[in-house]
Image (cartoon, rainbow, N blue to C red; front, side, top):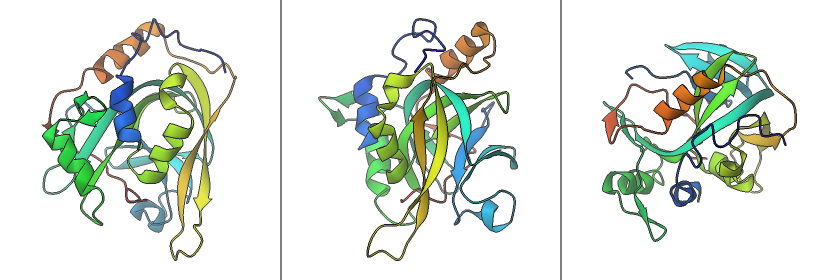
Length: 223
């Protein structure tokens, strides 16, 4: 797998490995990227196909298809509590492998409660050549976190991957859902100028503490 963007240009380790490991077990925001499962409103309303990836900005969805090539530029922890306001916390403050930030702790605990509106996991900064756009992708449910862990997500910053989807059909379960598949690849994808990449990475790696954000949330977060 080719290193399309040098680690040095990306500022080295863009998130502490222990912070990302802990989450793997509004204003001017970039478009939000996600995998749309069959239970999402957008699929039910016919706005996008089931198991398609899409980019959402200002309630407008751009269909990226069932498979999409992207470059993973950076990662950071993120916990979100939805409700009347959306509380976003990016700083787990991991000490000796344990999350010490009380807000982050609370959201992680609440995420185990059905329909709590709480979710957490690594958020990635992606470049998508086919859409010619930077986007953020929050891996905020159990299935997505397992996939991020299986590919050692922090080891592939600056590299290209193909995103696919798979149907999760557990035995003895009445539920089925789609989850992401991250496949490393060696293609040389078209990139924006390096200074634009560095500008976006710098903003991404320096998020504010505990903010209220107007955000699109995942309908599949519990899975």
